[in-house]
Length: 336
Image (cartoon, rainbow, N blue to C red; front, side):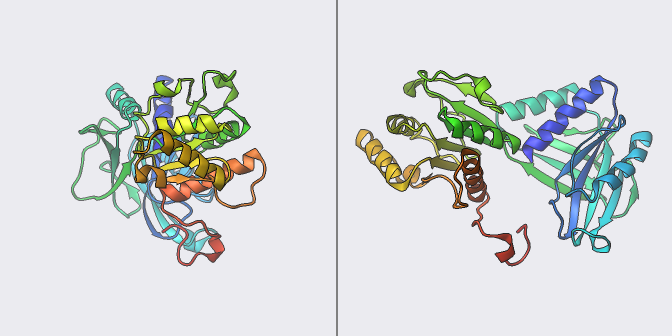
């Protein structure tokens, strides 16, 4: 969700610079099942453009239609969509549609939060009754301060509150410069992850080779800065070089990312770990046990793009604490 709100904030600011009005639609409550959970957002502008989605496509036209009165009046409203009465999901969703106006201070605070990888949260105030209400609206809590999404917003204790917590942008560190790195980089960027490609100085590659890369760095093993690798980070070693994998593993020994993967068969992983322990016997058990190798889940992947799908699927299953199964074999709701 963090990458989505980052993108929407940037779009709102760019629109303001062109005197284009924007309204934000947020799913604030759900009864039953829906394609997406509360917290998803969609941006509608008075130039006819829309960004984002609040469902799988069955609600967006209605949201866009309902947003026109908010664009004209500047007064927030709540709309409901009952999927039980139509083809689609079997649930009722409540959507807050509100005018937005971002100040320079709020824009700067968002930039700081994203850059410094800080958590933050939003609070949306609404009722489950359809109609307009000037007290409806959203505020963000950033770095200990509260910022409303429009100048005239004030908090009413008589309204329901939907609170959403945002983690730092999820990031992926890819160590290697071969074709599988290219595919992983592009696919992860499509998910909204910030991708850093780490390449040895002797590799004749540039950032342009890795479409979607947020950063491209070429440090020596002893110059590698791992300070930004946190619990919202995935790390994958795919250098296709045994010695380089060992050296990178040693350089990463003090980190505990959300996911750590090594490309290649099990026996190669064991050799890499054994060699790393020869150099550094004090490597922690927690560090070693977190390593997934071979990286990925078994979907019969053969090509580099397919392997990228396999690895990204495993990362998602690990960070969301889910066991990969076919959805038709899953009991209960799709979204737990």
